[in-house]
Length: 191
Image 1 (spheres, rainbow, N blue to C red):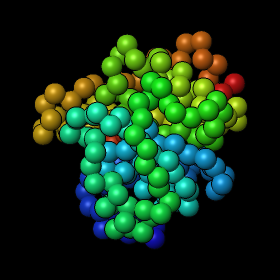
Image 2: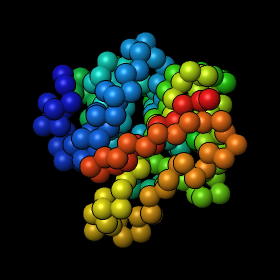
Image 3: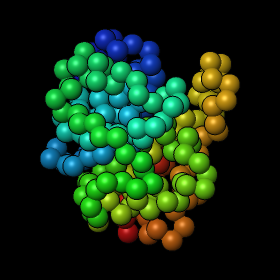
Image 4: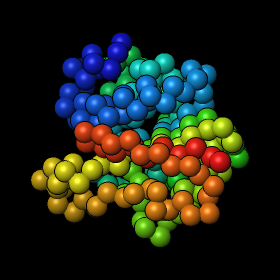
């Protein structure tokens, strides 16, 4: 199944992010055998786009996350588009990832970074760097300001988007920003 068909099956919420995530995943040209982590599962949109592109994905979020974005029916969504066998869920806190140093080829986070407390963002970034291979990449998708305004129509307390580039001081990363329709991508390579 391709992403366009998945958009028809999963509807507007999936399509809203898939328009940007699909484009970036294709541009990144990650090897098919890559070890990939998706941080902040939610509806499963990021993990599903990755799986539809042929990747096997680990995904997770904190078990105690009580926000409206956590613990949604990601597995049902993955089953509807036939990729549930390519996605493994594990509850974890991004401040203390339960993986060894250099484990992942790529780490993705769709719309999650701005929900992490400002004081914890550097620690989360350090964990992403620690668990990514020297040749790996880290990719954050953050909603643009127009998207946040739309989200606030139903969630008036939704936080402002974060710019991950402001948190990389001293982390030896090369950033690249890709503007999107709803989400901007911030891609980091180790230097």
